[in-house]
Structure formats: C-alpha cells, structure tokens
Amino acid sequence: MNFLAHSFLSFSDGQIVGQFLEDYIRNKDRYSFPKDIQNGITMHRAIDTFTDSHPAIHEAKKVFSPLVRLYSGAFVDVSMDYFLANDLTVNSLQGWKSHSQNVYKILNRHLHLFPENFKTMLSRMESEDWLYNYRTDRSIGFSMKNVLHKAKYLDKDIPVFEAFSDNKKFLKECYDNFFQELYLHAKHTNDVMTQF
Image 1 (cartoon, one colour):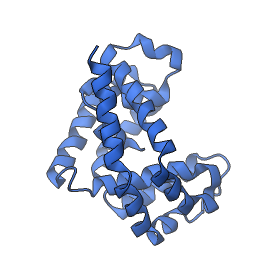
Image 2 (tube, rainbow, N blue to C red):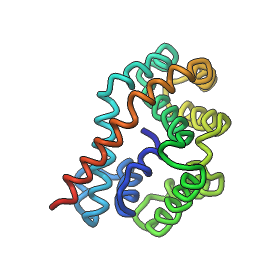
Image 3 (cartoon, rainbow, N blue to C red):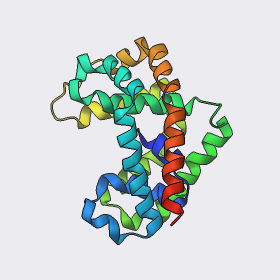
Image 4 (cartoon, one colour):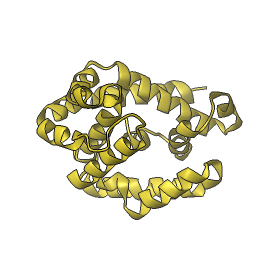
C-alpha cells in the first residue's frame, strides 16, 4: 500500500512515524526507536506482507504487469490509495482532510528522525496535500509518473495512468474485495503488539 493507507492503518502518532520511517532504516536500527515507533515499523511490514499475498491484489497487478512487469505492485499500491481516498464508508471528506493535516503535523514534529530527502518530500507532500488529493485523477496520475521516474529500468512514457483509467471499475472491485480484510488484519496486528 501507499502513503495514505499506511498512515490510515496506524493506531497512534508513533505508529504513523514508524510507518513512514520503515522505508529509510536498516532492520537492525529499528530497535533504537521508542516502542510505539517500532510498532509502526512492524505494522508497515505486516501490511505489505498481507497485501502482497492477497488474491485481489494479484488480480489487480494483471492490469499493470504487461506494461511494467515486476513494478506492477507499486502501481497497484498507488491505485488502492485512490480508492481509499474516495471511500466515504471508511471516512468522510472532512475526516480525510483532518487525517491528512494531522499526519503532516506528526511527521513534522519528528523530522529529526528522517533523512534529508524525506524532509524535502514531506514539504512537497504537505504543500500539495498529497494525502487528501489522492482522490483526484490528476494526483494519481502525478503519483504514477513519479513511480515511473524513480524506476531504473522503465521507460518514462509507459501509459500506466491510461491503464488505470481504462480498468478503474475492475481495480475498484479489487479494492472492495481487499481493503476491509486488510483493515481487520492491521487492527489484529495492533491488538497483538499493544497487549504486551
């Protein structure tokens, strides 16, 4: 999953920090952080493992794999954030706006834990309100272009957004068959981690 899902499937401020921090640390360094942040790192990994093994995600990858092969999962992650941002059964529009603003505040309070490249990205994320704006085609198109630019071996003009648009109904069905199970898995993971 992508930024919105990882932040939403956090059950404390520390877990939000840990979820974002996970991409920037070596495994052996995770134990140098407070327990709540360690739990966020663990949650991030639990979410990724569950997502990668879910049948609906395997189906969703088929939309992108002819174009981007092994990178299909990254584009599915971005797609799922689009459907989550538009899922008003999970949160209201105002709720998503409040969530986004809260995440930026929490991350800014913990910037000293992150490398410089994250600080630059967070500044853009906040000024352009990425988390809230994942609901728009324009923002998802931008995110997909960003993934293409970061990928070493992919042509930068691959029509991944067009594939997303052409298969939006199918991808939404994949989201519907997946997200509630992911939420329950994250909640169970949190319950296990925080009972000790």
